[in-house]
Amino acid sequence: AQRVTQPEKLLSVFKGAPVELKCNYSYSGSPELFWYVQYSRQRLQLLLRHISRESIKGFTADLNKGETSFHLKKPFAQEEDSAMYYCALKGGGSQGNLIFGKGTKLSVKP
Amino acid sequence: EAGVTQSPTHLIKTRGQQVTLRCSPISGHTSVYWYQQALGLGLQFLLWYDEGEERNRGNFPPRFSGRQFPNYSSELNVNALELEDSALYLCASSFIRGRGNTIYFGEGSWLTVV
Image 1 (cartoon, rainbow over the protein chains, first blue to last red):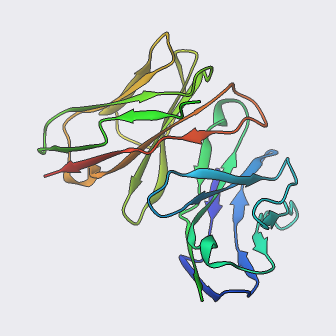
Image 2 (image 1 turned 45 degrees about the vertical axis):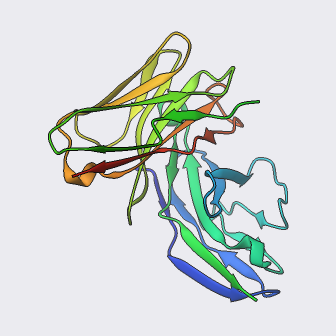
């Protein structure tokens, strides 16, 4: 069964501190993994996806198939990073929809 | 370019009533997805339509149904509303099935059942 687990409901850090939002997944095939972000009063938007291997707003995420993880990292958090972050998995074929974790609320304090 | 648009933005219904939510995908997108975001439960997958056909369905009772029209817009219908159906209903769209296609979300329809 497909499943995405984000163990932390809330993560609070100070500005300039490193951030790591954890995501583990369960999927028998070869999934696509994504991070979506929802800033206050804005729609859910894509932050990054593993197949692009890109860095967006200083965030990176590496797919670790051995540990079935896709943790989101940023070396120096900014106050504007405060938001709700969702990890999502997309399977193939008839499982081509996104399955989301329950989300982690990141709070960056000044 | 217009994003995914949903209507209505807010509505209040009474338990037992029926509701229809509407979604217009981004121009050129053929896939539409519906999600329920209830307080404390995260984003729960409801339905996925592509090219007018239902491709996948989440773990919801049959009173949740929908359809996709030839112009790729979509409706979500919920019959016999229950209090726990109160939630934000999100619609999303993507270009085509397959890997590498970004799924874009609308702002949602807030449903309150009283």
